[in-house]
Amino acid sequence: MDLQEYFGRIGFGGTYERPDLATLRTVHQLHVMSVPFENLSIHCGERNTVDLQIIYEKIVRNRRGGWCCENNLLFSWVLREMGYKYTMLGSRVFNTLKNDFGPMDSHLINMVEIDGKSYIADLSFGVSCQIWHPLEMIAGKDQEQPAGIFRLLNDGEKWMLEKTGRKPLVQNEAFANSSIVDKRLTKTIYSFVLTPRGIDHFLNTTEYLQTSPESLFTQKSICSLQTPTGFRALIGWTFSEVTFNPEQDTDIVEIRDVADSEIETILKEKFHIVLLKKLTPINNKAAYKL
Image (cartoon, rainbow, N blue to C red; front, side, top):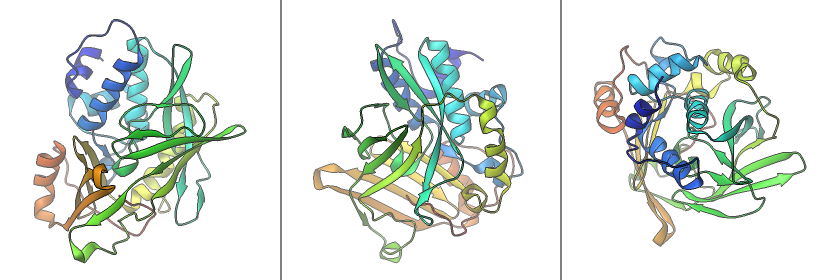
């Protein structure tokens, strides 16, 4: 495993004198624009793992993406190699169908300390809730990013992340009332506490997420990548391109269904992914929106 090879994967060509906030912001943004959030392995006969060496091979050398326990675990190694002080945390994702947080820590994030201040780094939530830059841990502070305004809320030991976005303008009328379009302007994303977690904390979660019929990830094949103007997503056979339009307080949403014969080309041209095994797309009902 080589830090310079990782830098090449995300297109980071700069130098850094010390582990500062400016460098963290740059690397964070480059990662989310270069490495997709995706769960395609479990829909093409492979398994996801928390083995860091395997994750490195997958993301850095095979130029794939990954889900949170891959992207954010890899980033914890990057933080360590770059000299940052960090803590791995577990978070519970908000389920819109149940109107409550999930019962387990299903989402791995990193808390980074720089010059006495703490920040949340999260490279792997995807779609419109993906932060481009670390969030400063100040309760109630509006933190504007390209996708909208994010804020961390604090209730005793529990922290919560929420986002206020913009009105989606769906260009294809056939999808105007699609369940994939999130019309909520403000939404809760996840909650977490500050208890440090090791990777063993996520072993059972990783198994559950890729095997249980109750898991979002067994019910939908997902690939999402941030772009300079918004993001792209392929969910099952539904391909979306979203353009952020903050000047008009809207997001331009283009959605279309694609044929099986188009999937391989879309993954290669839009997400820079080439799969070694055949993907079986799936898009069953589950709590997931753009």
